[in-house]
Length: 276
Image 1 (spheres, rainbow, N blue to C red):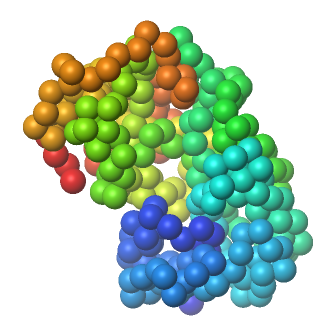
Image 2: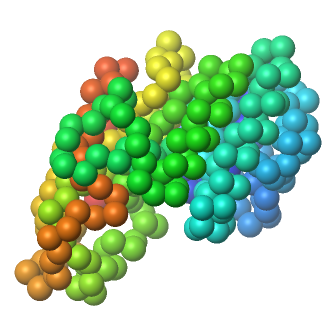
């Protein structure tokens, strides 16, 4: 019998990763509120459940579950909205995992927004987590809750995810409204988020508490925007400038722990030509 994997929060990253997991031999169950609005490849079953309903979550474990991947997104971009989207589901899952005879392997997809560094420091998994935003604070709280469960948990802190369907920054550069600030930025392609999730599930010996999921080349914002502009065939000379560090801080993220697992990035740096 194939090992069963629950994906709680079946969105873009889940849909990108699911075919890889099916090829690996997983029985993938995608959990979302409205599965009728989703499409699933062969080998993926979609079920309706709310991450904010402990009874519905518990029912998902009536059959044995070997692994759980959690990718949660808020409906409301307020402090309470982030709390409801991140912390509350993790509290419910903590209770569910603690009641299981054999808790599953868990991958919790978080964000490097839990770091608050602003001076271009190098940051790794051991660096201080002092978030400066409501979303970062709630993500960090959720991480601590899920890591306090009986399950074996790895938190994947992703930097800025780019790739097909993630158009906002490209549209701003195209329109000439993106603001350049003296900020270090970090990115990861959505294909590599998917690839690294698949890699960790295929290699359970790699089970650190935290992984930074980011590419191998932090860039100053001006250089990152210039590469995206080159893809679009536009220039950045007319973009507005600011002398203030952006709301996401300024830091350079190390991916050495990720690379030490043997994962090879599909997109080790942001290209100046289109990779769409």
